[in-house]
Length: 396
Image 1 (cartoon, rainbow, N blue to C red):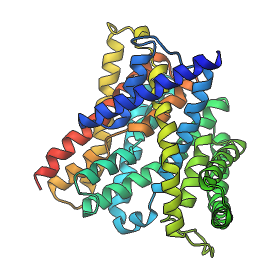
Image 2: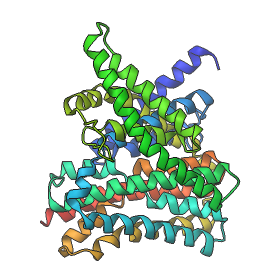
Image 3: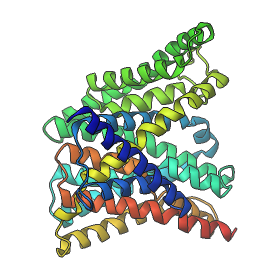
């Protein structure tokens, strides 16, 4: 591809993603849905102007690593402590039940392979903490007791989801599901999550020192992006997906993160907030590219929409996806309406679900029909939750 042609395609992708995201937000729809639709419109599903070429795929990879960095940066373990066992019950139920139900639907009902069924179940475990937190903030419910339960459960879902994602990644490249592969990933993850925060905190002290002495602007974005990319490389070397490195770096640099094992390195809140502010423009530049590429990779024209499989499969997964998240709150002591609010808030799969689905497609484990069905489920659950939550909150 010639350079000027690449520049033109990148321009079209960035502008279209922004326009569709703006329209989505004005329609009270999460921006991620608009960016996904931008890819569908530009790609082979509709206009056919852009194919997911290698250069844009690479930029999408950077975008998703930075997105997981942002998720880690916004993770607040203190919320888990405050929310206590209620968050734990909601998170575990909302993680285990969709995983089992999704796997059972794929493997037992539709006769799909073991690995494909695991990817389906894994995709349904996701909860988009970004979308959930945004809706709670818009409704001014983020500081309420139910808001704390929801955010705590969503954080736990994220952490468990990243671990599951690492396992599925190893199964996809390691020749299938095995106890040996799983044990290796768990060992690597344990080592990584113990060592990464200590290394990141040490490096952040160096970055902070040089930031106070340099006369050239832009040191923090340069060094933090370098740190995130280093962690992504390190995660790959240890046998985990690169995006795990981004999540670990964000978690370690979070202004609310306290190192385990009594380590004498404490978060500098003002510096962490400065890092977050400096990194936001870069994150918001790259992450829409990932969601556009997801839309570009989906060719709706190749799907036989007259086939009963796609509709039955999608509807079955939709029911499983909703029931799996609604069940958890009914195991805790709360009012009827609060339980519905908590369950509904856990439903949107958003960007986290798309990460699972895209990894399955990239690994050639999910075919176009199954991938399309999962994207339909992700889009529907992401749209459904904010609308229902607003109605439920208005009753309080």
